[in-house]
Amino acid sequence: MHVIRIEKALNDRSPTVRGLAIELVTDYELDDMLPEITRMLNDRDSEVRALAIESIAKLAKRDFPIKTIIKRLFDDDELVRVAAAEALAEFGDAAVLSGLYKALKDKSPLVRSFVAEAIGSIGDKRSIANLEKCLRRETDERAKLGFYVGLSNLDSRNVLQNLIDLYQSEDYRVRSAIINSLDQIKFKGKTVEKINLFLKDALVNEKTIAVKSSIENALKLFRN
Image (tube, rainbow, N blue to C red; front, top):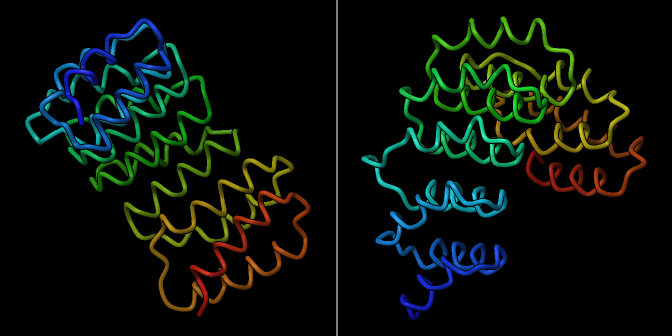
């Protein structure tokens, strides 16, 4: 792998080339290029910024200046904000919680959902009250899913019935996200049996091919 060529590509005029260069840095674990990747958090192209965040999450060490990622929670682009939330969850540092709490007020339901999940994954039980308060005023189905996942990981509450009720959504993207979220939640004992029943029933009634595929994969995961 020619590092000099990758470094040159990171500064290419084309955002596609810059993005591919970031992916190469990540794939080959070239962590000595992190300073250059960090600079790209301010790239003019939103996809490049998102890729830079994902790369940092995989390559950065504990002493990485995490404030640079927190700043991206308030990026102009929705998917960059999502990437920032996911990256902060990877770092798992309670020091980022204040930034995540502010991001719970994001205008995007998708971002709020990922932020709530990130807060739950960090595991600070002091976050429970904050998530519950925000959930009570949340009206968007996709956002609610993130809150359920986050809360379940903070206090092991059984959110299966919440997910089953939410699955009545007319939005196939919400239904798909619910199915895909099941492996993020720690279910115990007989709950697994109930999940199987829920999935089998959902498979019979689901009309969308993409969601059916997700259900079939989930059934393999929760087979008892």
